[in-house]
Image 1 (cartoon, rainbow, N blue to C red):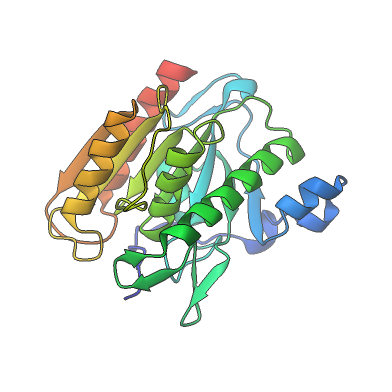
Image 2: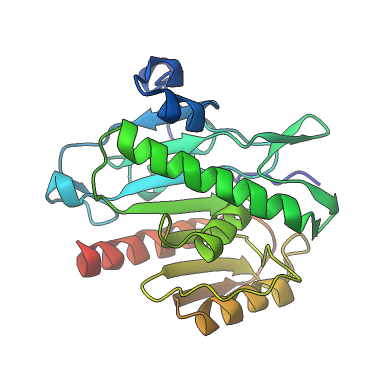
Length: 253
């Protein structure tokens, strides 16, 4: 089943405005790590994610936008604008296809993930993040992954496996992506917001519960918002995420 992004009544994105070709990067290793389609969009100078207030550019977080199945790196920009249109945005494209739809990792059937592939793809995304940080001069700026559905799952997997690269996640309609894996990662300092529908058939509540338990047991700070309804992103979800991002920025800015 296709993960559908909701209509949030947002402005269209000018595709020519924010493309940055990986081929223009000078360093060969960086070019290799970034050698998949992505968008990098520079935010307003000193933008402070979620707060609507200016801050130090060196401290301003970057939104790493991760699309769901059937989406792409441009479609997910609408969600970035719903959270903060002034933010710096990095949006890569998932490199797995299923029935012609883009995804972040393989699955064996609906709701059953190829966990070996999840681990591999999370490592690739971690490499992409590290290379993008270097190539785009992001310095020590915090990178906050914002994922929907399959994008939320790869964000959670990357944070669980590579917290030194990614330790901030907003997961819309996500679930636990690493069933059957023993995890001993120290997630002290990691912060995660999980937003789920109670009747979501595509991201069942028991799997979201498992994500909450595992993240917490490994030391992460987990905030959770449950709502009535199923798969998707509501205006209430977006508002909750904006508030969480503003609080996070105040705490870690």
